[in-house]
Structure formats: structure tokens, C-alpha cells
Image 1 (cartoon, rainbow, N blue to C red):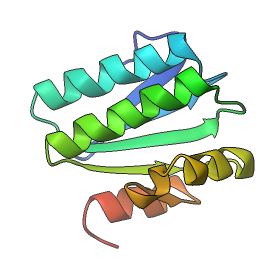
Image 2 (cartoon, helix red, strand yellow):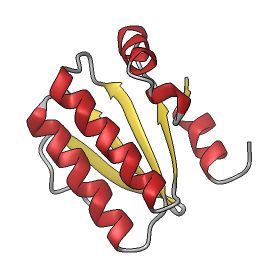
Image 3 (tube, rainbow, N blue to C red):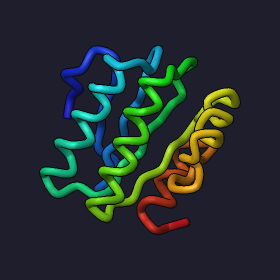
Image 4 (cartoon, rainbow, N blue to C red):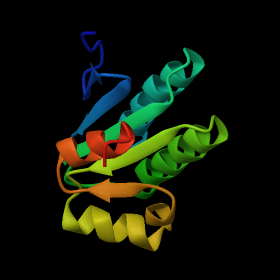
Amino acid sequence: MMSQYKTIQVREEGDTLVVNVVGYLNSLLGEEVEKVVRTRLDNGGRRILLNFQGTRMVNSIGISFVIGVVEKVMEWEGRMAFCEVSRINRDLFRVTGLEKYVRSFDTEKEALDYLSGNA
């Protein structure tokens, strides 16, 4: 599946949707992430990986979108993980309480193994 989004790249890895979040995570980027995850859940997908390798900064509106996505995945009883989160963003996720609900991995491979049940 080729991505039709400008600031995120989306691809399938087995039954996991991998969303590469690239750039400044603000309201515009947060909206795109939310839209692609919601579409995936509506279509029956339950495994979501957000890769933050290309994300340097997250503002308060961006973090609220991430929290909303996490809540939506939990509502649908899906599995979600984050990977390649910078130290500053990891601190932000800890302060907002996100790390209590979503595991964060250093590499995409570790996160995919976890989501597929191989970890």
C-alpha cells in the first residue's frame, strides 16, 4: 500500500500497520496519524506501530492526538507500540502517562516482534 500522505509513510508488515511519523508532530500531522489509524481500525486491523524515527519535536496538540490514537486502539482492543522515539519525546511520553499504556522499543524489529507475539 503506497502512502497518499505527505508527512507520514504507511506500510504493512504482516498484519501490523506501520506508520512512520515524519516531521514536527503538531495538529496537522497528528490529524493524519489519527485518520490513518482510525481507517485501519474501521477495516478490522488491530495492530499498530508508530515509528517516531523522523520526529524531532512534538507539541501539546500533537501529543493530544497521540493520546487519542492510543485510546482508540485500546477501545478496539488492539495492540500498539512505539519505536525509535527520541530521548526528549520519550520523556514527554512518560510525563503524559503514555508509557503506562504503550510499550516503546528502540528498533522497529523489536516492536514488530512484540506486536506479532514473537517477543
